[in-house]
Amino acid sequence: MRVLLTGCGGYVGSVARGILESAGHEVVGLDAGLYDGCDLTPLTPPPAPELQVDLRDVQLGDLEGIEAVVHLGALSNDPIGELDESLTYAINHLASVRLAELAKTAGATRFVFASSCSMYGASAGSGLVDETAELAPLTAYAASKVRSEESLAQLASDDFSPTFLRFATAYGVSPRLRLDIVLNNLVGSAIASGEVRLQSDGMAWRPLIHVEDMARACLAVLEAPREAIHGEAFNTGSPDANYLVRDLAEIVAEVVAGAQVSFAEGAGTDPRSYQVDFSKVTSTLPSFRCEWDARKGAESLASAYRAASMDEALFNGDRFTRLARLRTLLADGRLDGELRWQEQAPAFSAA
Image (cartoon, rainbow, N blue to C red; front, top):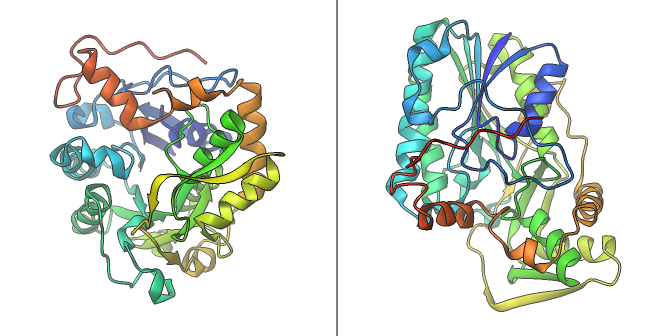
């Protein structure tokens, strides 16, 4: 299929492109370039997008010949909602729905939407939550995913199939690394400082999924029979990948010899706590199985961080933290208050 991959230069997209292409799909990448240069050297940066376009500015002509969309592009986590909630909704919800409408008009038949298990909010006391559970988002990011699913579902028709992958919390090595996600952060802290530094009391539950497994889930939806994925939501992760954050810290301390678990000043309860049932995705998409677990992922991250000479300056800088990166671009006047380039967007690094 000819697939439009939004967010192709991001944390997940820079991994997903290679996996989709290796499976024989023709990928057209779209990205605004906000995180160009945020590479974990000496890893190879992702290839330049064919469309270096803000998601809000996509035109019908950009989708000519596109048969499917894998929509990863978004303001990507809870803290960014603190920057401006209205921007989170404008980009994550309204621009996503507009993209789907254009894709449907252009003749695309599948729309794979990167949603999030964070929509379940504080549900840890309810046992494992499946796709029928009440949605109780606690942040603008999570709420934007709820709104998007609701709006995109209304576009489903005989010739247009939206599918919602409610991803667990991502982790793992990517050319466009992020340190603002739990396991990546804990391993980075251990390598940089010798401390596995918890920002909370560690008693929140968090399901995890490796970035490569996320990409494979997108591929599985693209290649599944239409009747299996049409208008469906799937919690996407592994049945054995619900972890207490404190247990993740202990795994990291075992992987990084000499590292000690510690707590940041003021560390308290994290209300975002949920355990997720992943049985639907494994039963409906037999070609999809998670190949990674937290320990294997932590070992891979530690190796990559050492190769990149991760130290406290790199760990605490803005390169790998999305909110910090945006604040730097805003402070430098390179982005305006709507997160649009004030100057020509930087040319992407070549692969």
